[in-house]
Length: 173
Image 1: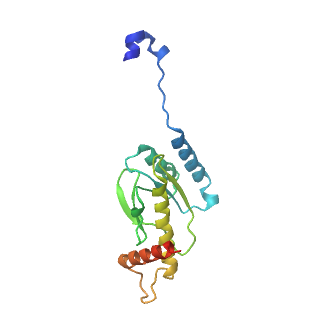
Image 2 (image 1 turned 120 degrees about the vertical axis):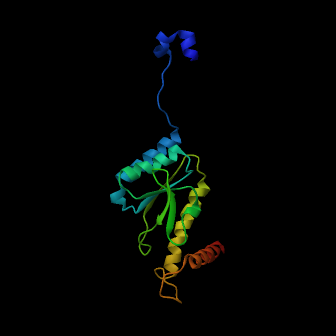
């Protein structure tokens, strides 16, 4: 409006240019996710994890990139979205919050790509990775999800207890 008042409506295009921009950090993350997607077969990716606020459009776009390529991917806003019962609560591309089975085969090595929104604290990413590592350790410690006292898989409560115990063991020097 100020440009039109100063130069007149007929001269706006000579004095005003509008274009889409994103910050460098966001562009770098998008480029990295595109690279993960392009190399997903060679890398053998099981999934891509996107960590960041559910209300961030830039973070939501990081999910869209692998989703449009048909790569299994999840957008979580905090580590607690990854549960000890091997489920993940995540935001889908339509904005719905859904819970579903997470790691398909805990008995094999898990290969994942990880990214985060530009303003997501590093600690949020580290906490999310820790949840995955603990989930894997619980499975390894219970011989494929079976406890020594039972041949059926553990309940979520038992797994939470085991996860807490493993976390304490890992924290000890």
